[in-house]
Image (cartoon, rainbow, N blue to C red):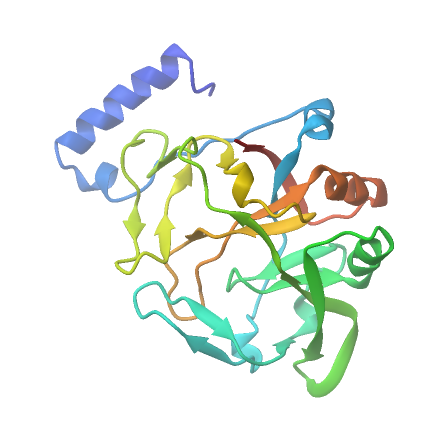
Length: 246
């Protein structure tokens, strides 16, 4: 449903009224989310884009023996302190980038790593992955991508909210300030001065209320140059949204 339509506003008024009444079925859960669609021409003209990983797998690396140090008991922010160990048999075989259910374990194909190297793209390094069934054996087909490029913080022009019908509140904030649970009610806007110019970067802001295996994660932002390289190579496992430098 178009967000500017009369039908959308009618539904917004209905849900807002129910939430003001304190009805838990409306106030305790998010309702709906925005879907942004672009033409190929619009994507090709974008200066930077948000890369959304759509391919996932389990079990997570931590379940396979990867070691983490937990830094926050509220949001489960953590730091990986060992090489990544995963069950490579469970990694989507026809995708070039995917993530485990832990959100922060990003795995790429050797083809992705080669495209990155040959294209002299910047902002990431590739680490070995060890196989769960044989932890001394390196995977030849998969690598962990560690993004070092910095996209900075989200600019104030980025609209956050619990869902399209509650634009003035977010679902949860880490009491220490590490992460937030929210939907993005607008395109991602970034402070141009905070972006270091790398071809692949991550935001300073983290998102998600991690618990147990789940940990908060940044957004991935790629340059126009990297978008063109990935598209020309026909790599799979992700989608794009236009982001804005302001």
